[in-house]
Length: 230
Image 1: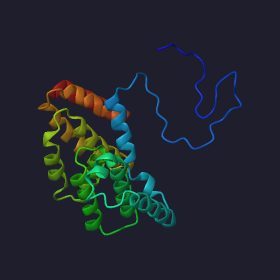
Image 2 (image 1 turned 90 degrees about the horizontal axis):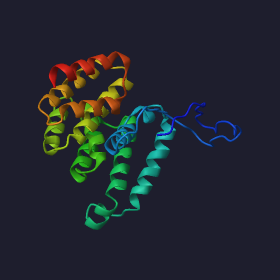
Image 3 (image 1 turned 180 degrees about the vertical axis):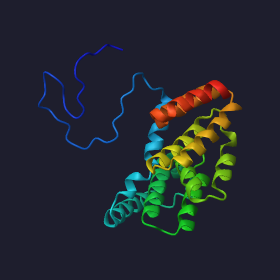
C-alpha cells in the first residue's frame, strides 16, 4: 500500500481539487490501518444492517412509509414460499426485506410475540443466509427465556465460526448502542467461553474485536482474555 502524507478528506476531494463535494449523506465512517479480509467486511455489513438504532430514531410516519415500501418490494416476488426457484434465486433480497419489515414492526411497537414469529420464520426459511444471524440477534434480545438456547442450537453446525462471530458481534454492538454494558460484558464473556473450545479461538477473538470496534475500555479485557484463556 502506498504511503500517503497528505490530508484525508471525507465527503470532498483533497488538494488540489478542493471544491468537489459528495452529494449525499455519509454515516458511520471507519478508518482501518490494515486491509480487511472478506469475512470481516461481510461481518461488519451484516452487523450494521441488523442494528435497531436507525429505525428507533424514525418517526411513526417514517416507519409506516418504509414499511409500506418494504411490503411493496416483497410483493414483487409473488408467492415465494411455494416457488423454490424464486426463493433460491432471490433469497438474499427476500430475507433482507423480511428482516427490515420485522425491525420496523418492532420499532412500531407491534406485539413482541408477533415480531418474534417473524424473526423465527426468517431463520427457518433462510438458515444459510447472513440475514438469519441478524434475526437471531433480535430473537436473543426479545426472547430472554429461549432465545439464546435457540441461537446456540442454530449455530451447532457453524464449523468455521463465522456465523458465531456475526451473532455475538451483532448482539454486543446492539447493547453498546443502548449503553447496556451489563449485557455487553455478559456476551463478551460468553463469546470468550466459546473461543476456549474453538479450533481457531485466537483468530475468532481477533475477528470479533475487529467487527465490534476496539473500545479503549474493552481492548485490555479482550487481549487479557486471549492471553489467559486461549
